[in-house]
Length: 244
Image (cartoon, rainbow, N blue to C red; front, side, top):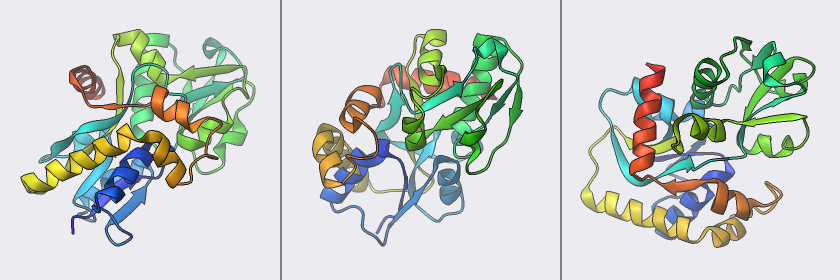
């Protein structure tokens, strides 16, 4: 059975739901990680296919993006944000989220090309969110961000800022393999993902994810954009160029 790596966030629930319905995953062949570890499982051959963060593509020599679906956002994403008590121009340091290298690199691009500021960037470990105060801001991603939305005076949504910079959506993660997969598997795999994306409300209910955010249906239907279309491909290419 093909080993599959996924992300342990709410935004992957439609994918997981579809893969289960098509009998492509079970407890024996699915590995869950947060983004910064997902690519490692693919590089180390622990999985055959993985939903990996966009930034990891620059470290892979031989790979294929095998799906027409991704984790993306057209504008606001609500789960990749910088939180602060003060305006960004008064921020002296930003704590970086240890769970996502893609979001960190996106933040660096925005700092340099959009905000044009030079705060100190600080690496983090679990529990760092409690250090957001005064002129210290923090980047927080994933399901942990839901609890922080509305808590601080300033919230800066990185996907929205990328759109303001480029007029393009942003791609946070895509499905990648480093091995040769059969055409039949790829066809079934994409059909499973499509099924999940078309049945988001059922996915939330059957996977028991109603309590992860205040409105998971709004988040998955309106904030996350799953189709890996031409504009997202253009955006991914631009993002990778900016970080090289």
